[in-house]
Length: 142
Image (cartoon, rainbow, N blue to C red):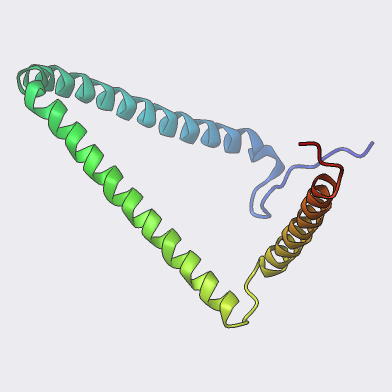
């Protein structure tokens, strides 16, 4: 098999490869260490903020919890109302395009379903008439 050759910039000598890897490792260690220190500082800040905020949340919870529930219900109500409004406008738009003959998506399926329903209704009407004729024209015993 062919051996994979590593990329070496033209200005570097073959003997400088270990130095290049040391620089890469040092840069990676510096970046990783910096991010680890930053992560620790954020964790410490979060713990301190939670320690300060917990008594306030306990004191104000009889007010905050119902307020959050009320605001959540209001937001959900407005979103649901808007969603149903958009759905209604979409349906009216589709019906308008269907009635004016602009052939909206799904019109073929609607026409097919209407024809199937009409043929079944005709078939059931014919059966009912045959059933009625058989029972009214048969022998009557009174």
